[in-house]
Amino acid sequence: MNRKKLKNLKNEHGSALMITTLILTSLFIAALNASSIVLSGVLISGIQERSTLAFYAAESGAELAAYDAIVNGNFPAASSTNVYSLTLTNNSSYVVSYASSTFISEGSFGETKRSVSLGFE
Image (cartoon, rainbow, N blue to C red; front, side, top):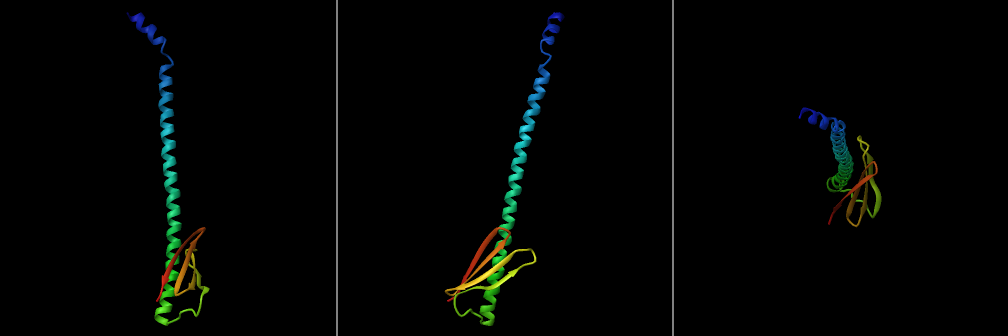
């Protein structure tokens, strides 16, 4: 019986190597999938950050226009562009336009743009 077991073991020399290769390949594929998910999350968070900075820049321009109009009474006489424009310290910027009793503030950061509008009656 011992000879029979030894003969069976001799026929299975490559099985450990094959199982190890399959396990390592599976782990490698799982690691690639996990890194793909993490990379997608990083890219999406960068997009969200740029969008937030552009929105807050637009909000800053709108607030400045509203303050100047309400407190100082400085409404532009007619439709005009670039009533206010400024580049902020975080490299975001805004441009405020005025048309039909509405201030339109467009904020930008990099290639991302967001706008806010304030209407007055």
